Structure formats: C-alpha cells, structure tokens
Length: 426
Image (tube, rainbow, N blue to C red; front, side):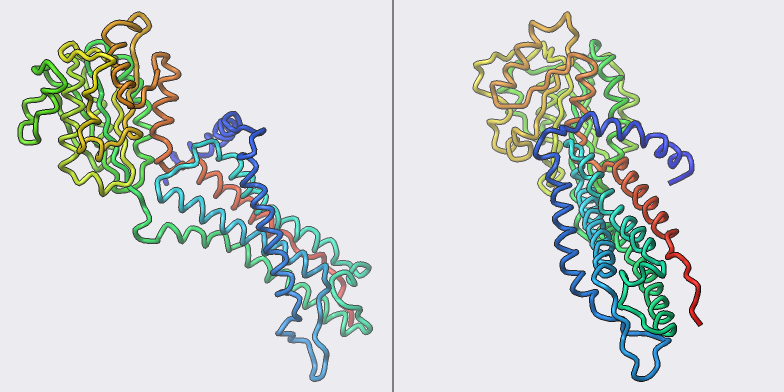
C-alpha cells in the first residue's frame, strides 16, 4: 500500500465508522450476538487460563538451593488470565475477519459495527489487565500479587519474579497477528463470476455514468481469480420472440446482438466499461441469452459465487413480453443451472417519465418468472442497490484496515505500560 492509499484509508476511517453506525440496528438481537459471544468466550478462556497460570514460575535466577518457589496470588493470575483471554479472543476475531475476507463474503450485512465492538473489547482487555497489575506494584499492595515476603531477599525475589511475569505476559499481544495466517491457507478463496449486462442504448447515458462510478470502486475488492463478464449492445435485434432467442445455440451466438467480453482483472473490466458509448439499440433478451451462452463455455460452475446483473430500462422493442408468458430464460435447464433465480437481478433504471409502457411489461414478466426485480429508478436507490448486490462477495478493506488500526493502537498502549518501580531491598 503506497502513501497516498494509506492516507486515503486514514481519511476514510471516520466516515466509514459513521456509515457502520447508521447501518446498524442497535435494537436488534442479531446486533448483540457477536459482542455477547465475545464476552462469553473471554470468560471461558479466563477460567481455563487461571488454572494454567496458577503454577509457580519454573525459572527463578535469584533462588538459592532449597528456597521455596515464589507463588503468585490468585488476583495476579486472574488478571494475567484476562490478558491472555483477551489476546486469544482477538486472535479468533482476526482469523474470522480474514477468513471471511478470503472467502469473498464481506461483513456488509450490517455486522461491521458489532464486529469492531467485539474486537475492540478483546484488545482493551489486556490493556485494562496490565493497568490493574501495574497499580499493585507498591510495597503496600505487593501482598495482592504474591505471598507474604518475610525477609528483604524474599521480597526482592518476589518483585523480580513479578516484573518478569509482567513483561512476559506482553508476548501474548502478538497472538492476534497469528490470525493473519489464514491469508496463506491454500484453496480458501472463493472467486466470483460477475456477469453484468449494461444496456447502452441512448436513454442509458446517466445510469451507465453512475454504474461506472460504483463499479470503479467495488470490482477491485473482489477476491483474486474472480472473473468479470461485461455485455454491451453493438447492433439492433434481429429476432422477434424470446422462444426464438432461446433456440440459438452456442455455435450460433454470433447471430445475436451484443458484445460479451470476459476479464480476469478488475482494472481491465473497469477500463472497458469506461469506454462504453450510449448510442445503440436495446436488444435486451438477445443480450441476456448471449451472455449465458458465453459464460456457459467458461466452466461457470467452478465459481461458487455467481451473479448476473441486468442494468436496463427494459425497452426491448423487438421481443415483446407479457406477464402471463410462461416462457422465460430460467425455464431452460442450462440457464437455471448456471444462473439460478437468486443469482439473477434485473435493475430497473428507467427515468421517471418512462415508469410505464414497454419497460414496465418487461420487468413484470421477469418478476412473474421468479427473477429478482430491483426498483432503482431513483439515482440514490440505484447506487444503493448496485452496491448492495455486489458488496456481499467483496473484501471490506475498510473493516480490515480499522481492525488493524485498533490492534496497533491497543498493542502500543499495552507495550508502554510497565510496573511501578520499587526500591530494591538490600
């Protein structure tokens, strides 16, 4: 990440947190599942670690032969247990965030804020534990940390052992970084196949301009090895019915209108979209079927995530549809296998003055066939719809960056906490 990108990430932290807050439903039980689960996991780990840590230190360089081991108090071990529990819980959360990122399943389902709250709680746990332990490093409170010292030499041994245990406990702060190891697990990524039909007829200039802006931001966030299939129109339709369109085979697909290009690099897909002109007709049905025929030749079932977005005003002047039409693309077994109904989304970007007529019958026919209809006639809703459909399979880099930022700040704060100095007893 270069300096400009890093600066942009920093500048975007506060707006991103506000967006997470506005999207969150604080009154929903689902919102509190992650924070409550985090607390329960920490309590469970505390109970385990408190038993493990109650054993006396193995190494005591100041001990003489026959000296009994220095035993730390239950309070000292309990705070150390909270420190370790917080670090281990943070490790689990980092691993979970990384896992979801690798899978291309973002947290953009309004769970970003509870996830950040949970991670912050886990990282603040060792900070609080160290502060509480530091406050007990006085001669008056020393008995709270270890057994009673009856001689100056035993007190010196006790203080040294406590300080050593205090410093070594900070090593656990590195534990959350182990969660990043998930990045290197082979075969974990779930690349996506995203097919987008961009109606580039004359009435689509503004919707395509908005699509460019959104896709420019979102497509680079997809996992590696994802594929992007972009379809645009290059000539008017030549077929009069949807039945005829669906009778066209892969070997005949050049007879259908539409330019279908596949990209394995998001930047190349974006560059292509940038150059799309809005001066064509809108043979939408031919474009949909041609997209399917092309995608079907690219081993689409190897992509666990598949999505087909049809961004159009629905004005296919050649193929006439009605709501009662029983023939639609998903009646074809091959089409339904490659693009099941839940993966196909029609995005209605008609202008207000075109909210009825031929576009209306086109969308109602798609809806009647069980396809997903998205009313995006309002520009702001259009952006929200497009982002909402694409984002669940992308890596939320803002969430990852804020998670790393919280870790760095809490870890640095914890590292600077040292036990109070006590005069050495001679």
